[in-house]
Amino acid sequence: MKLLAVPYIIIALSFCLTQKINSQTNNHMMITKTIDTTLPTIGILIFEEFLTNEVVAPMDVFTKKDIGGKQLFNVILIAKEDKIYISEEDLKVLPDFTINNTPELNVLIVPSSNHPDKQINDTVLINFIKEHGKTADYIASHCAGAFMLGEAGVADNKKIVTYETGSAALQKQYPKLLVMDDEIVSVVQDGNMITSNGGLVSYIASLDLLEQMTNNTQRKYVEEQLLINKLKQ
Image 1 (spheres, one colour):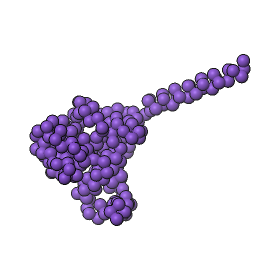
Image 2 (cartoon, helix red, strand yellow):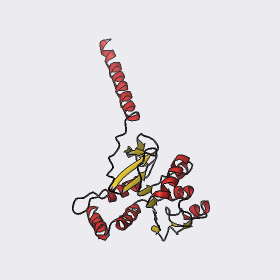
Image 3 (cartoon, helix red, strand yellow):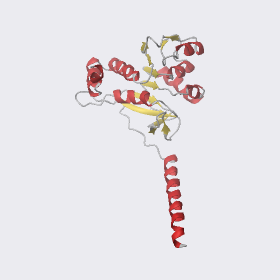
Image 4 (cartoon, one colour):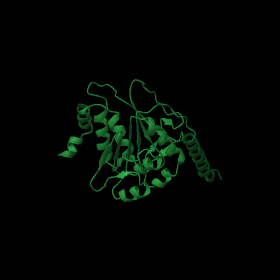
């Protein structure tokens, strides 16, 4: 009987351990990032099933220091709630701030998901974009993030691009937008708004914006850090 009891003990301990891990995961406390108020702040919005490339690309570009080792930007992740968010590719991410305690943003970046209707119908996210779209120096979107800009009304009468094959749907849903042909245009800027097809093209859009906010020297330096020159060979 003692031997038969061992597996049950192991199962019970395993269950308790799993419960403890899940509890810690669901009830963690956010560690808010320290903001250097002398630097511009880049805010990247995240939500369930976000596309990883479209979040990683601007982080990769704007967190790079200059050639002298100086930090140029605050880069933060923003979400509705203080919890773990899981990307389409199963990357688990914690936000730095929620939409209720977001600091002033110089740039708001809106990625996408494979189910953009979920985000379009989320009035909390859309109102956040609407609010910060009025005050940010720049606003950017990648892939179907363009639909969220359209829903928020921050892209009316501006040139915009979305994912490949998505232009017709974007134009039909938001007739006030000046939607570019996604088969020809991969990145477009109109005033303080820059949009892209998403995916790896998000890197190009992020580099374009970096160059505007710094200079061509910093862009080339970051491209070297990312080994983008290797991809051009």
